[in-house]
Structures are given as structure tokens and as C-alpha cells.
Image (cartoon, rainbow, N blue to C red; front, side, top):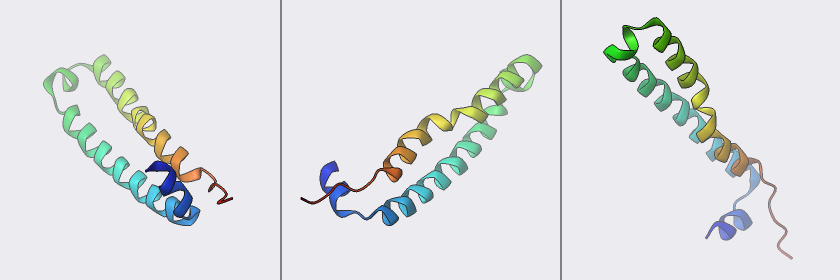
Length: 79
């Protein structure tokens, strides 16, 4: 199935879909991170709070890597 998608989906369309997926990922990640930041264990401790915000701020990159990799692949030749 993946090979069919890569063969017939133009690069421009993949980049468009990937950009929308990244936009949705960042918005959902930020909303979930803000909700979790209100937990008393995170909110009441300065050290845990700083560690949480660093992890939450950088953490969205891990799920974004496969999306960027998928959308930047060159289309395979049909021959």
C-alpha cells in the first residue's frame, strides 16, 4: 500500500498533506502540554516545571520526524 501511495501521489500533494499534519500535530501537542502542565505535581515544583516545559517543548519533534521524512521523499520512477 505504501508503495502505491509513493508512486501515484505527487510530491506537491505530499508536502501539502504533511504541512497540514504538522500544523495539527503542533496544535494538539500544545493543548495537551498546557493541560498536563496544570497537574499539581508539575505546577507546584519549579524544578519539575522547568524540566516538563523543556521536554514538552522539544518532544513534538519526535512525532514530526516521520511526517517530514515522508513528505520530503522523492517520487519513485515508474520504470
